[in-house]
Length: 489
Ligand code: NAD
Image (cartoon, rainbow, N blue to C red; front, side, top):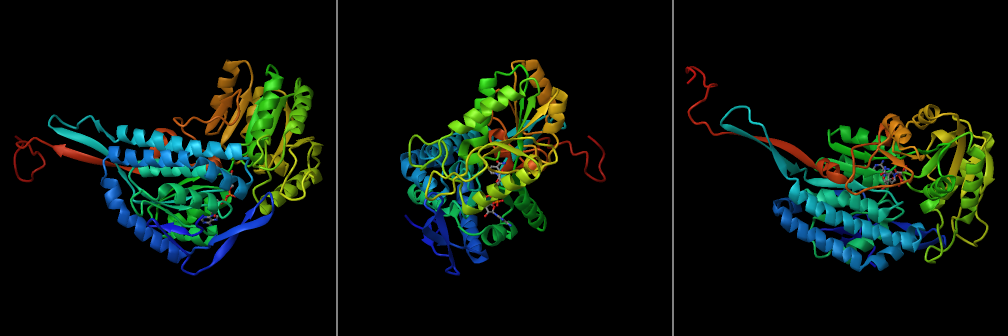
């Protein structure tokens, strides 16, 4: 495996020769180290991506489609190797890591076709002998900054529409999952034209900020925390560059009195604990009608106890360790605070003692929760589910809308009219009915309020990476009623 920056289809160390360690969260041992890049490396990568832009953007959409399909095919061909790297680097079960590669390949295929279809439009002319064409053009060099929880999938969400639209890219992976992206680049990207895809590793405050500040990068697409999103928006304002932000969530689940309690408990458990709760659309709050709260709580606790923790490479494991020591400590602190503020742990609430090493945290369910507690108002990004009871849908909707976040929401009920009426009032980018965490590549994904700006997936993602240009054509050579000093003809 090559542990260097990938620029212009070549491998290079950081100019400052600095590196940082990549840690396996299961063994807690150093795997290797990767470049700690800074603004010098960003400048070199920008030059490469800028030079590649003219040729790449001038390919026909069909030619770009062929390149993206080849990337998809090669990603699938090397899925097992790449998935192993993801598992060792961030603790995700291998079988879940494999689905990430499939996701990435699907994005590449979907956008390569969509971009052939959605090239522009013609709108009604302003007079008889004129035409108005609307053409969509790529921005140029796209700076992509991604997190660690789904490194390959989330890379695909940005890379596929950005490239299909005709941009070239610089990818800055999270410092926790640099290897996954570098390994993918090594196995998959070599046959792409030089400079179209570049990867530089490093810390957010150095490599990330240098990318955001670079004047020749007109657009930044970011996925990560609200705090970093705000910082990026401020920095980008200096050059008035376009920013799209996919940020954190505090997704609620509403369990109605007519819900299938078994389905609701299983769905809530999966939605709250999959990937050790490290999903932007994780179930982070549950509001249950008081008539079913004890039945639901009992069922959820049972489900939480069934979750199998273990070596990410084992087939029969549901969740691995948390991705890093800092994520693990974050969970410990959030649970401690929730207990101090009066929350009662019904199951979990501590490090798992089943293993000699690894950042394992037990799936945790709380009750005795009030709305002002941090565990209800702030994203935990942990396998922790707090339950509160509600008397009605209007109370549930009010509580669901009560945080600064607005990414997703799930409602469990058999009454679809009730669910759709509530969905109208929920301020979030996605509302799922009877199934949590559902996405559709063809439907927009993103956040309202402080959960983000812009959308990924669907035709909306393609629009994020293109600018509209109006081309006006006048083909009446005789009539020029705006000529000075002449009478209208
Ligand atoms: P983070 O904000 O700490 O880091 C994300 C990325 O930003 C990393 O690559 C990091 O190096 C970089 N970064 C950090 N500081 C930076 C700066 N000042 N300038 C430029 N780049 C900087 O987030 P994280 O811990 O990696 O990811 C977890 C967060 O991501 C959670 O809040 C989660 O909800 C969110 N997330 C959102 C979505 C979504 O689609 N809405 C998806 C996944 C994760």
